[in-house]
Length: 335
Ligand SMILES: [Fe+2]
Image 1 (cartoon, rainbow, N blue to C red):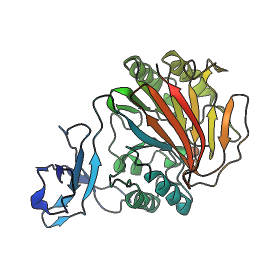
Image 2: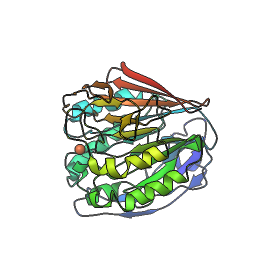
Image 3: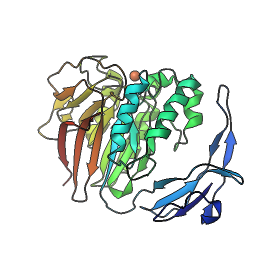
Image 4: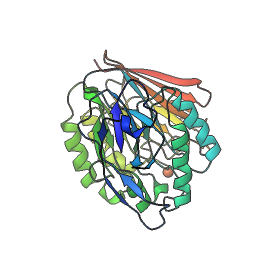
């Protein structure tokens, strides 16, 4: 792989790139070919890089990415999930969200119908390859989590290169956002390994950092599926203790935003309680929404959620349909 930090494209001529990095390749049963994995280190924060992949005589077309900031700065990202089953609708959501130039996508799982089906993964990655490019030309990276439809398949682990054990991990996007990914499908580790790890990870999160947790299954019922009592018993008290700002889930195929929740009750504001956001509308046939006492808003349309983080300690969340229409929005205030 060849790459350069540059203000303009370099056009794919290998002689023009400043840096090179190499990795390794591997394959697995059912794979369509070889997976190539290259780790880039010592990158400059908040900087655009252009790159080509391959080797002498056979390089890809040029793409570009932007590194995360290391100081307080304004940025935006997208959250959503359940992109299986209906490729045409999935593409419409992908195209709609890319116009907003998000720094990354947090995907709440069920990317494909059957995690063991390589042809479904190939179709899904094709959509990502074609459409997860911002109007600014930047490739939009993914922060994924496992859904039940991934079936804990080898294909997931082999096609993503993720931190820690790849099932639960965290990363910081600059000093003001900690993203925590959990695996709601590892049922026998919800009360044990994951709860312990969650406690440790949240207890080390600096003050005044937005804390956003993502996993697949719904904590609170909104018309389909059920309250997840394992998660309510084992994770919700930890979310309360450290005041997680937003818990993002998928699994149920609509949009649902709860009122602020603390100790399984409605709190007076989002500074007192946590927002539980279900966003499962990235192209699946949708489920009926049935409001509950703790529901603040719901909608059954295909959608994604755009989250803007500002430098003054505020955050603005917009639920957006495939036409760019914002059907729900809310401000959160950290200070
Ligand atoms: Fe699901």
